[in-house]
Amino acid sequence: MASTMLSLASATPSASLSMQEILKGKARPGSGSVSTLFNKEKGNPFIKAKSFGRISMTVAVNVSRFEGIAMAPPDPILGVSEAFRADIDVKKLNLGVGAYRTEELQPYVLDVVKKAENLMLERGENKEYLPIEGLAAFNKVTAELLFGADNPVIKQQRVATVQGLSGTGSLRLAAALIERYFPGAQVLISSPTWGNHKNIFNDARVPWSEYRYYDPKTVGLDFEGMISDIKAAPEGSFVLLHGCAHNPTGIDPIPEQWEKIADVIQEKNHMPFFDVAYQGFASGSLDADASSVRLFAARGMELLIAQSYSKNLGLYAERIGAINVVCSSADAAARVKSQLKRIARPMYSNPPVHGARIVANVVGDPTLFNEWKEEMEMLAGRIKNVRQKLFDSLSAKDKSGKDWSFILKQIGMFSFTGLTKTQSENMTNKWHVYMTKDGRISLAGLSLAKCEYLADAIIDSYHNVS
Image (cartoon, rainbow, N blue to C red; front, top):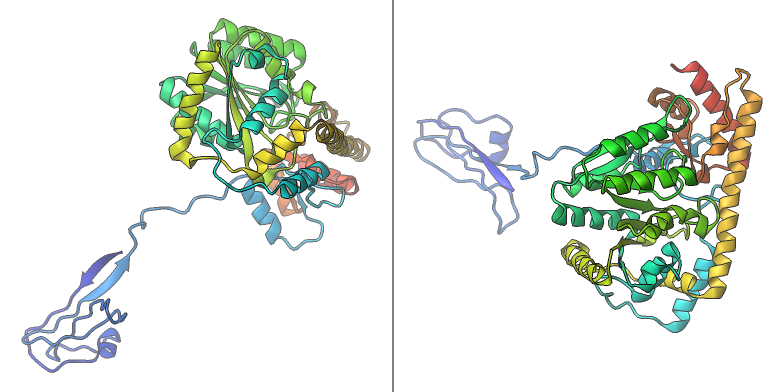
């Protein structure tokens, strides 16, 4: 700590006063002197000292070296849950964070995860450090799950895979790779996008710009705007794409549109960069949700893909994911992997083992893998049922004739309602529905029983709040 010294002085000698008198303002000119210093040995912040010919008071004031650091604002997503927990209203709903809930709105641990953890206990596996690149068995199965085990990029060893700290950490590794080896290159990000994307690239000092994606007039995809902006970007840009279940809109390109997107990216010599956070959790099919990535890989394009197992295996707190870089040759892939490891070493040294073993056990075991697919279809099916019930409730209750069918056209755990920031605040302040201010709601946190209540809140906010 820094100390600021304050002093008073007088030219008249006298006897010493007590510290209490000086601190209470009873010191008088000519009454003596006391010095107040920090006595480290005795643990007493004040000591007394006489002086002749003047009164002096020296006070040590502790000032933090961190005084210039301002309070950070609450996280726009995680802060929603904090506000929700503080609300005592029984009708409250937390539709902010993308985490799956049961019909009773309770957290859910997949049965297949429990079985995988029991296997780990039976084997008595240790807690030794993993290599920098992570668990080899995990890296193998996660790449095969993404591309397909028989994909040429796997057979030809053209994929550099490094275990990361879920999707966020994997994106951050890729951002550091871009900053180091593609200086000045910019990343194109959809407007809107997941709230943490911009933070990640800002933190890595990678410049970014936005391409049009959401059309508020149709509550759908602005495909022409998207293509135009990708064409206009500087050659060699990195184009960040959501592999499936776009967050926050839930609006995905159709297969024909994906082909056109790939055409433009190839023409401009851009680098596709996929964020795949919902494979299998969007449609219920692992292969269907990976089709966009596989389309680009089949064209022989080099690309980056960040993966996460927070949603599809419910491993939110395990922080398990991967960064995959598809290269033109096995030699290039080996060099890229070596540099990803070099970046990871001073950042976090090596990744955690528990979640990696869960994924390796589930995806690598045919019986558990099939059980997972069935369970994932159940989870995705519940969200689809909630989506349908919400649409039915809105259509039945809203007499204005507004078309709410966009809700059914969206996919995944989120719905982009089209509500403005002010309308979203009304949802929270009046109806105790907690959501992000961009109008996104998590259908994974909604039950069938609460759909009509939510419909009332949306209709009121949409029609009565300007």
